[in-house]
Each structure stands twice: as structure tokens, then as C-alpha cells.
Length: 403
Image: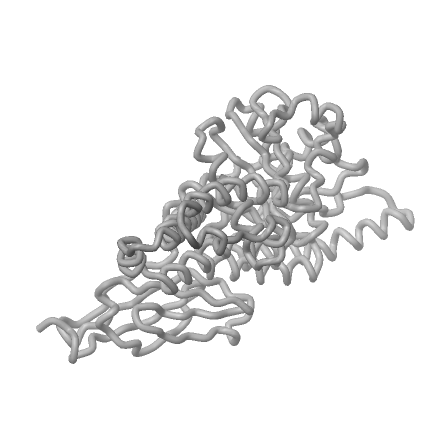
């Protein structure tokens, strides 16, 4: 699964569609998905609404050409359809004296609750991926802030649900005499299971990774830096960075040629700066086209730029958090936890610890990192940056370390 992320107007939808088209024409079965509520995927593919209605089934999935399908997920419609399942489960509690107290709000009322639509959309993407119908899922995500809120929702909600109502407490509640509690536990378990499934999909770098799309200007460079650190903090892998919309080289000595040459020089300086700072993944440059990149023919040309030097890599299985023994033995040992974290602003880093979790905050985001079992018996002794890695060192706590 490949997620195209970037600021609004950077060209995520166009590049996602181009990548999907090339991958499909190479022989893979591809589904390109829009989860941006301002859907423009059909417009970029130049599919008339009438054709969409004619080729889309009940799930909304339409066929673009051989090996290539598309869908624009409507979160509100998805909420209504999933809500019917919730209502039917709640009805199981109806055969008792207090059934009239088990009331559910209308589905439209839930759209205002933080995270509801994001989780539903991600669960639908995970469901589509789990069907095995396509070998590649390519996702056109919303603008950066909305996309990061969406992608981090499963981990955040799953962690809080596990702490709010632990499994042992739910098991005890399910053995009680009140049927309403039984239904509530079943609903909670089903909800948590679905969220954990989505979280695990996003965490698995062999199955899911992001392509970051940036514009060749200072605002695009700054946004790219922030999104890289946000994704690293969220534990989501990055496959490549695409700098989109670079002015092509032109010849001539006229005023227009000089203007374009000056624009290209300024953009090339941004490209050089990005390439010097992003050394762990490919940096791909896509030049601006004279005509609007709409339709399969234009997308095919853009795909050649996107894959000009080499195909986009598959997700890496490398773990972003690694633990190693550095020195000593017993209570004199030193252990290092390395976390990939290319920060935009290192001064924004904050560290804390709650129980078995290390709290890492940076660039306006925070993540709870569950410590490895051995580190839970240790205390933090130091922290530093080593290139793009945050290194936190631990020493055993003599009071709880095995003798």
C-alpha cells in the first residue's frame, strides 16, 4: 500500500493517479483510492460522472482500464452503512426490561466526533486491501495536517481504549448478569479489534509506506521537513520524496526565457537543499507540464518522470525503533534505544516516561513508545541525536534488575 502525502496543491492526486496507471500497465492489479473529502481523482483521470456511475458497483469501485480500478470513499455514506451493523448489535439487548434505555444517536450526529470519520475511512481502506483483489493499493490522501491526523488516529485511539477499559476488566464485565453490559463489551471488542488491525497495517513497513510530494519553493521545503518528522514519530515509513512542478530548462535570451531560467535556478537551489538533507530515500524531480495533466495520456507521460531513473521502491521491513546492548554487564550495563527521527526542529524535542512507555514529542506531535521488556527495568541516563536517529540510553535499575 502506497500513500501519497503532501500539502494541498502539491500534486498528490495527479502523481498518485500516474503511479497507479504505470503500475497497472506493468501488469499489476491496482486500486487507486481517494480519501480526500475534496475528491478530484475522477477529474484527474478525466472520467465523466456518467461513466463512473456506469462502471461503479455497489461499493463505488469503478474500472478505469484493464488492471486499474478506482474509488472515492465517501466517509458519511460509509458511516451510515457501518452504523446499521452497530444498530443491529444494539438490538440484541432489546429482550429485557431496560431495553428502552439503550438508545443510539443518529449517524449524522457522529460526524462531529473527533476521529470517527478518519477511523472509518482507514478501516475501509484496510478492508479493501484485505480482500486480496488487488496486488497494489495506492491512496490519494488529504493535505498534510488532515492526512497525519488520519494516519495517527488508529494508534492513538487503540492505545487509549486499551488503557480506558483493559481486557481483564472487559472479561469480568462480560460475565455479569446485565445483558446491556454483554452487548457493550461485544461492541467495544469489535471496535478495538478493527482499530488495531488498521494500526498494524500502517505500522508494517513491508505492507504500507508513504511517498511525500513537495513543491520546489521554501514553503514546500518547510512542509516536507515537518511531514518527514511527523511520519517518523508516527512510525510510518517513507519510500520516496517527489519534488513536483519544477520549471523545465529553456533556451533563448528573451525576457520570458530569462524569467523561466531565474525561476528554475531558484527552484534548483531548493531541490539541491532537499537532496542534501534527504539521503535515506530517493528524491525524484517531476517537471512542470505546459498543458494541464488531466487524462490517461498526460498521466502516462508524468509516470515516466516519476519512474525515470528507477521504480519507486517497495516498503522496507526495517524497524524504526531498535534496541542494542552497548557496554557493561548486569547492573553496570548500558543499553541504547535508537529511533529514526529526522526532526525539522531538534529544539522542539521533549522526552518523558510514564510506566512502561517513553513519551517522545517533536514538531507539535507526541507518541507513546512501548519500551522493550528489558528496558522497563531500566532508567534513562542520557539522550542525544546521531544523524537522523534519536538515541536514548538506559541503565538497569538495581531495585528491580534480576540478580
